[in-house]
Length: 216
Image (cartoon, one colour):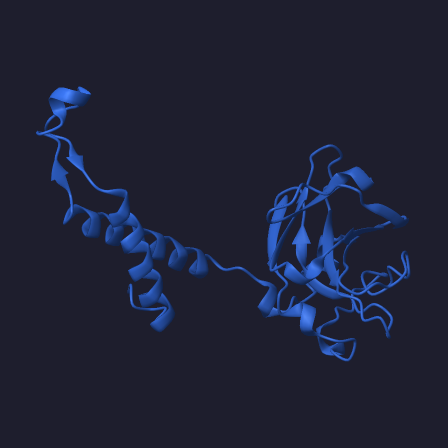
């Protein structure tokens, strides 16, 4: 079942090289993990999970001086075949953060073991096949969750940024009437110099650094 799961790290190729370390446990290594903020874990669709089972997803950012500490992120199943998790805060945690390590019943989590030498800057994702009832009793750390509210704010920000760009550039636009004959363009079209966009970007970023909420 190792080809059941896959992981995506932003800016990288899809990883599908999960190792089956126990009959119901699978492990994958994420290299160069220091720069990772989010990961996506999903079912490939090649081998579906049993109808009453789910894949509990765990994260470990090994400490060279300690055994792995597995932190429960969430789950995937046939009805929810993918999930995105924030892990930037988890990378700062040590094995002393036992309150965040899920105690999954029936052998879930916390026991993927030493499949590889512990190396700094390398993370691991473990998936444990558990009953949906067991998974429902697990609690993920809130810092790993991405919410609909954050998605709405991102959409609002993108909309405001586009409006800001349009309004700024519109004030510098010129008619193509003078150039229409030479370039065969619609004389009613408006022309905006590329330098205007560069100027807008510089001003926008300065405002954003001074006040990230200026666009609201």
